[in-house]
Every structure is written in structure tokens, then in C-alpha cells.
Image (cartoon, rainbow, N blue to C red):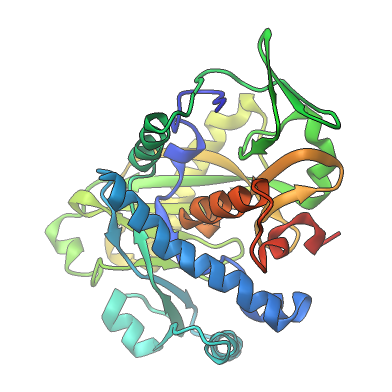
Length: 351
């Protein structure tokens, strides 16, 4: 494994640590674009991954603050928006998924959110950095070799092998797995499928007691219906992690200024969800880059222009279970024994 920085110290550590059993996409639109059978297969694989990944972390004995946490995706109080959202929920139920519908008054009681309705799905939260280290430790114990601070500069595939160049060294392999948020110059042909996005995250001070009484239960994470959406999850000591403010990546010289601006914008937008926290201060803030895809679903698998490449590319909104899903699909693909439905994650879905 070649890691450009310290393992887990870049996009992984900056991610939300939020696991979910569904994709951050419309099941209804996916069924319309790719067919109901395909949509059901995609969602079923994601649901299995959301169960298998926490189980694998427990087997490893990972100390990563793993805990169950439902995801409540809510929409504002607008009759037309609620009706469209209810159709999305009903299509999911008709396809066999046991997601829950929450009406506006119940949403207020459960999460102290003033919304029109919500869909509740199962999920989990974790410390993504510590989970990454646990997985790396498990791989090392089984013979893997990891090189940190070894950015890949070039990948060249031939009929029989692939050469991966890092610094002055070249590694020859049967295949290469590309799972990174950092763009590689050799992979420009993928750009038409992907849109780089910079997301901003803020973590607040601990809520004082008077604020804690006004924010309801802290058992679930939240996603709103903004475009792009905001995500909220609870941290230890009654802190809030709040993510959003997506925009195209800014030049390096403007990054710090953009982070300051987005930090205070996020704090304002958080206060619209929970007016009682107005005046709460941010303690940390950061950004990270990921990719949006053309149909909002991840790409896992092969691309016809890149022989011996196995790709795992997604938007960060799909959550931590995506990592396990991608690993299992790519392992089956490498071993030449893909499951039925694995091809649906590939680039051929939109070619």
C-alpha cells in the first residue's frame, strides 16, 4: 500500500465517521435511471456492508468509538416537498427496505428539529482515524506492506502487469487499486465522470446544560434537504460536528480564507436547525476534498481505458460503510469471481 501522507491522516481523519445503510442518492431516481432491479441490488449491497463493516471492526478489537446511530434525513415544512419525500420513502418500502417514516410533530419530539417529515435509516458512528489504524494493523499482521509518505506519481499498465512509480522507485504488480481523493495526472480520462468538491466541517464547544435541554435526543445523526446537504452528528462531551458548505476546490492560497468564511457560515446554518445554540463557538474546523459522480452513486470496479486498474471512487456523503463495500467488490473482481450485481457499481453504468 502506498500512502501519500501518514496513513489515515488526510481525508480519512477529516471525514465525518458516519456509517449508513443507504446511499446519499434518491432510490426513486436510481430506479428510474437504471431499473428497479438494479436499484434494489445497489441498496441491498450497501445495507449488507453497513452491517458487515462494524462486525469486522469488532472482530479486530478496534477501539474506535464504534456505536449504533440512526440517520434521520429530514425535509422542511413544505407540503409539496413532503409529498415528494414521501414518494421516495414509499418506493423504498415497496422495494423491501424497512426504513421508517417520521411525521413533523414526531420529528420535533425525537430530534427537536422543526421539519415537515423525515426518513430514519439505521447506521453507526466511529472515529474514522482509529478505525483506519485498526484495519491497517490487521492487514500488517496478515503480511501487507505499507509505505507512508509515498505519493504515487505515475501508473503504467501493460498487457501482463502494471508499474506504479513513487519517487525514484517503481513497483510492478498484477493490478493496482486506486482509492484516493487526490487526483492523479495519469487518470485525466476519468474527469468527465467526476466533479471535485470541497466540503467544510466544524466541531463546536461542548453544549452548556441550558442548550442541551433544547436540542432533544442526541442518539441519531441528521441530514437536511439542502442542495448540497448538511450533516450533523454528535461527538463526545456533547459537541456537535456539522458539515456542509460544499463548493469547487479553491486554490491553495485562498484555502485558509475560505475555511474561516465557511466556518462561520456553517455555525449560522447550524443555528437555523437549532436556534437554541446561537452563540455557541466553533472549536475546530477543517475541509476535505471528495468527488461527486454523475448519478450521485459511487464507482467501484473497472474502466475500459485503464487495464489492470481497480477503482473505488465516491462522494464522502455515502459514509464509512462504503469502504467495506468497495473492498469486498474489488476483492471479488481481482479474484475473477464477481457477485451478481457487482457490475452495477462500475463505470459501465453511465458509459
